[in-house]
Each structure stands twice: as structure tokens, then as C-alpha cells.
Image (cartoon, rainbow, N blue to C red):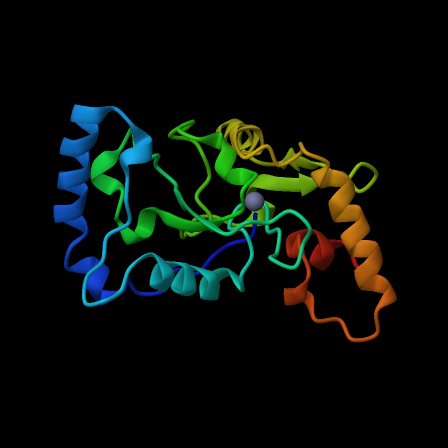
Length: 199
Ligand SMILES: [Zn+2]
């Protein structure tokens, strides 16, 4: 999970997010169905504009595992960092939205206040994480405070950063990257791994 610099909220969203959040909260209280959620439109803009803006922030990579759309298993979705069922009023809040792959999206409404948010000022990969170069797994940084290590463990668990063959995928991606002469890192998945692992 690499640090993300968040850009300004789109004006069309800023105008409406509070109202839409209230409306969704009321609808969810009634239906209790997360599937009844819909992206909304204002000034002719909606879901596609959000995907475009969020993609620019991550160069089209998943905000959490950094899989890229060129990778084998990515499906671009918008994730609610604070799940829309548990925090319905934040469902359209710009700071709560992240580009996310299908696998990371599978945490559904799992959330913990200690979960690391990649666009937070205080976040950096090094502060919280370390890499096991033999297995390709992420580990909490042992020099971090116990609280920070706990946050790293929770983040690895909820986003399943060491599951679904991701550790092996990262090592393979690094190997392929090192064999190429033109190394355009943004075309690769797991850039945090490649950047720190390349010879
Ligand atoms: Zn992902």
C-alpha cells in the first residue's frame, strides 16, 4: 500500500455529497440492502468521472494492494473506505472513496478504526510495513510502536494483502520488471515492492 496524494474534491460531488449521504442513510435504514446503493449524478457527471479522478491519483492502480489494470485479476471499482452500510452518511464523501481492485473490494463491510488509510498525511509505507523478501509477504515494521504494528496487522488482514497468491505475484512482477530494459514502473503492479526490491 503506497502513499496517495489526494487531489481536490470534484465540484459536482462537493455540492451534493452531504445531501446524497443523508438520502442513502434513510434509504438503507429502510431497506437494509447495500445493493440498493446507487452512484448519483450532478452537472452530468457521476461514477465514471469519479473513477477517472481516482485513477489519476493512483496511476490506475488499486489503492490498497497496488495491482494494476494490466495485471491479470483487476476489476476497477470504487471502494468506500468507511463502508457505506456502517457509515452511510460518508457514502459520497470524496475523502472516503478509493479506486480498488475486485479482490480488495471483497472485505465488504469489514472495518476497524485502526485500518490504515493511504491518503492520510501521517501514512507512509516504511512507517508501518516491512517486506519479507523470501516469501514476498508484507509484515508490520518491527521498529514501529505496538499501536502502529497493530494497525499494520489489521490492514494486512482486512485487505488480505498476503492472500490470493499476492506474495508470489509480487515476486514474479519484480522478476519481469528487472528483465526489461525500459522500466516504466507505472505499467506494473505492486510498485511498492518493485521500488524497494530492484537491484
Ligand atoms: Zn487491490
